[in-house]
Image (cartoon, rainbow, N blue to C red; front, top):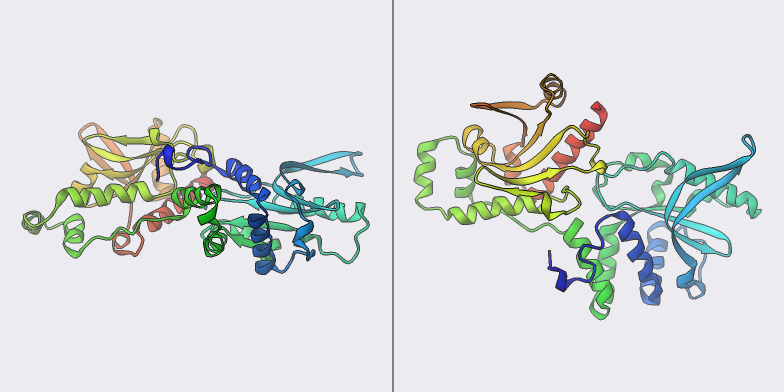
Length: 352
């Protein structure tokens, strides 16, 4: 990722809320606004208006609280906050933005939002209009919870597609803010460095034959090999909101601790992934996911639930999830590891 001096959104766009605010602010540029609306119209066919010239920056707002009057309780029922809302003559189009693959929809998404839009149709006496066509989700292509969006599946858009359209338009080349917006999204969420191991490197990091390994060491660039492994760990996107203080490096390991409510990790758990040199040496596991709890009785239950392996070294016991060695031969190693971590996080949520 570029340094603070090289990107105006460095340390600003870090999660969905900050992304939404910047995304909405960019709507003040007509070229960006029209490109976005054309993108939505082309991909979904569900924008009912034709003339984008009548749509202004002030027609957009963020973090709007949704509520409607409920006859049974005789009070307003709150159903959450919308990310990006476009208001055309009192008719609202809702855009929910999900930037992380693992972030779940809320209890009111999409059902509560659809109810809100239905009530809006009634209030405005709109007939023969499918209110569900006014709710859109912009998500990563690998989003884990697409099944929760079946009711609006025709209105699903992908960030990767929008970034492609932006680059094709070359708006990023003539506007610094749009350029940095594209780059920070790529750096934080969508760009994966192409890291590949040559055959000798694969034999060295995966081969249990120590004699052959010693022979290979004579012809290998070990610093280069270690740099590749560290880069893979850095490339995996599920980190502590990209917080560099989460990185831990010493003579025993190089990796990240995940402590974030978004990951659904219980407070008493320690969740770590990276290169553990002892495990690599003893168990032929170059990169592992490790989980630990102070309560040993509970730890044994977790081990069984998540199919963890156990490694004892003197007074230390490590419970870890080994990655399949085939991952290190894949086209994008970091992305495959990310998928495995996300699967494990989802399993944790189901078990806790």
